[in-house]
Length: 145
Image 1 (cartoon, one colour):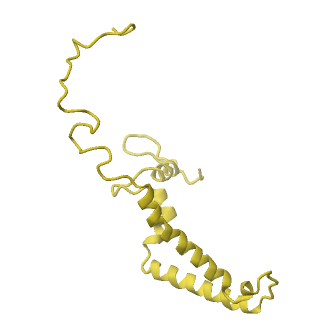
Image 2 (cartoon, helix red, strand yellow):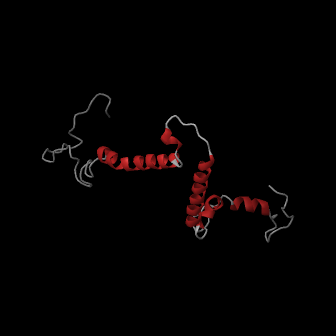
Image 3 (cartoon, one colour):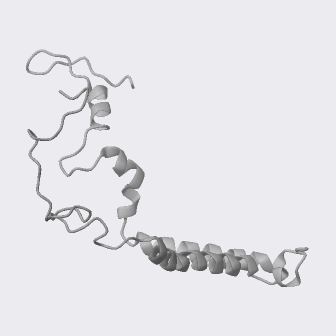
């Protein structure tokens, strides 16, 4: 802690420790329900027009890299890999393929909505016509008490 703790007392006679109060405030959740560390790490995301700034920043970076690609002399095994912007387009196509393959894969692996039976009803594997045996009539086994 810093040395900015003054030697003053409050109304009850206790010494005030400003540095300790500051440290306490760094890990105490505010009345809004937001942790102070979240404000430190992600507070910049609430800046006005941050989405547009990120979008245009990435666009400018991409354009710069494509222009830079014009001046690089690459020695690829396949001739089509030497074309300008090939790796950017290849990466975009691969990403789009993976994202779009999630839909058929989800249809293949997803279970039905009523897979576990109706909510609140009896389980699907129990015959409702069978009589229910009370607990005091059920057979006991060795070790049951």
